[in-house]
Length: 440
Image (tube, rainbow, N blue to C red; front, side, top):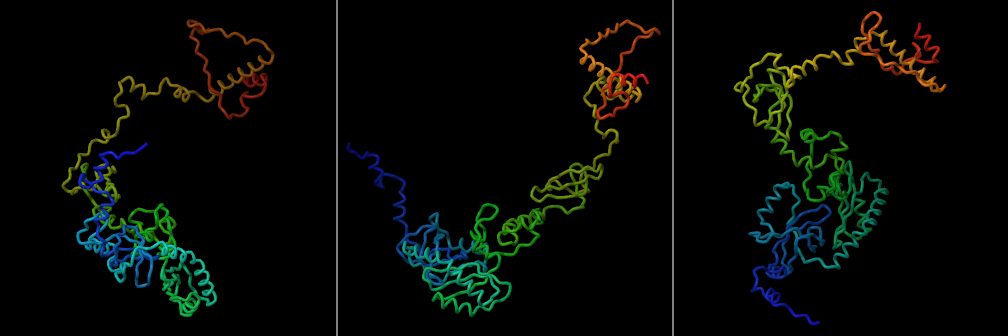
C-alpha cells in the first residue's frame, strides 16, 4: 500500500505557511556565544571563560576548557549577553548581582581561562578512567603518610583531564610539613602535586551526598561561601537544641539555619518585649509571651487576670484603650443551669430521690444487713439447685396490706454486694453458717 503525503503536512513543512518555528529552525538561527559560565572541579568552582568556537552548546553540556590548573572537563551553566534575549542566557549585570548576593569577594569566581571546544567521547572516557584510579592514588598517599608519620587525614584526590596536576585534599589540626610527601608523590605519579588543607565543611562538600531532609547537601549543590553559624540562630527559630538534630554531615550547625535568620530578625523586631504594658480591645494588660511566625502576643488583662492572644497589629497604647467596668463577681461567674426551666433546674440542683442520695443517707448497719440477706438468698438458691427442689413462691405484696401495727409495709431494701469483701457477716460458707451469722 502506497503512502501519500497529505497537503496539510506539506504546507506545514514550509516555514512561510505557519507562524511557529521548529526547534531545528530556532537552533539554526542562534549565534555562537562569546562567553560561557561554567562550573568545574570537585570544589564546584564557577568561572566565565571566553569561547570562539562554531558550536552552540546548551545548558549542562560538557566542555573542554583550559583553566589555571590545566586542561579539564567543565559543565556549562549559562551564557551571558547584553540583552539576555533567549531564556537560557543572563545579562552580565544579573550575573554580577548574583555574585554579590552569594558572597561578594569571597565567591570563588574565576575568569582566567578559555573554552576550547565541546568535549568529545574520547575525552569523557579518559576522564572517567582517571576517576576510576582514585583508589590507587589514595592508597599510595596513605602509605606515604604512615611512613612519614604525618598527623593528617586524607580526604579526597582530584585528577584532571590533561594530567598536569594531581590535587590531594587533607584535614589536619595543626600545621603539617608535607614537603617530603610532595616530592615522593611527584616521583611516584610523574606529575605536579598540590596539597590543599580543608575544614569540616569543605570535607562535607567533597564527600557528602544527601542530608536528612532528602535533598543534596547545600554545600555540594549550590552553596559556595560557607559562613559560620551560631547557636543564636537555632534559639531564635525555636529549633531543638539537640546537637544531633541541628548538625549536618560535617558535624557543625546546618547551613539552612542561616537562610531564614534575617527574616526572623525582622519579624522579632516587630514584637513587643515581655513584661511590657500594652493595650487591647478588651483592656490593658501585660505581655507574657510572643510568637514570631504567627506574630501573636499573649497578654494577661489587668482587670480580671484573663490571658488572651492578640495579633500585634491590634495592640494599642495602654493609656488610650477602653477600660472595661468591673462587674459584680456573682454576675461574672458562669451559670451552669442557664437555659433550663425551673423544674429542670430544681431537679438538677437537688439530689433528693436519687439512688446516690439514698446510699449516702443509709447507715452502715443497714447496708451490712442487706448484704447478709442477699448472701443468704444466693446460698439457698445454690442448695436448691443441688437438691433439685423448686424455689418457694414469694407472695406478691398487696397494695392495701398493712402491718399488724396498722402501718403500710415498706419495700425491702436490696443492696449490691461489695466486691473484695472478706468472709465476715455470713458472706461465705454454707447455708447453716450463714443463717447463724444472720441470727447473731
